[in-house]
Image (cartoon, rainbow, N blue to C red; front, side, top):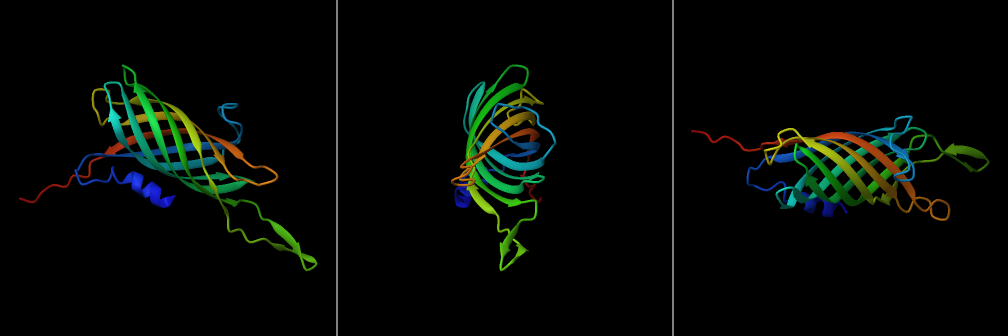
Length: 198
């Protein structure tokens, strides 16, 4: 899976000295059935970093691919780090607004945030936590706004509703654990072109 994610990012990190898009978002994670809730409390914080590249760009639309790494902390349940890639379609409306849908797959590794004990040899001892690795499919919808609507490499701010699942979660008990995350973030373009010496 990690190799696949590295391969997807390679077209972005080419040697053409083009501005590179960097995505950063802060989010609130919750265990819930997707699209049954929007904003949840208490807040379980998370952060995500990523990048993307385009497959095809039209006058008002584009097909693109993302690669992301994220971390979240859900008190009394788990904390996790995930790697994923998403295929997306965006439609750009006049005035700088844009709507997008993204379908993704990735790997999530979680660790419990509360201590666990096992009963052995007549007493309880702390259970070591090596974490759990699971498949991490996702589907997201977002609305964004391009700050410079006439420029191809304009920065963008967005709000994203991210629904995702962990599978297999607990075979025989809870096979799938569903989550929702509400992201607020931005995509910025970093120019990596270096100046030549005279």
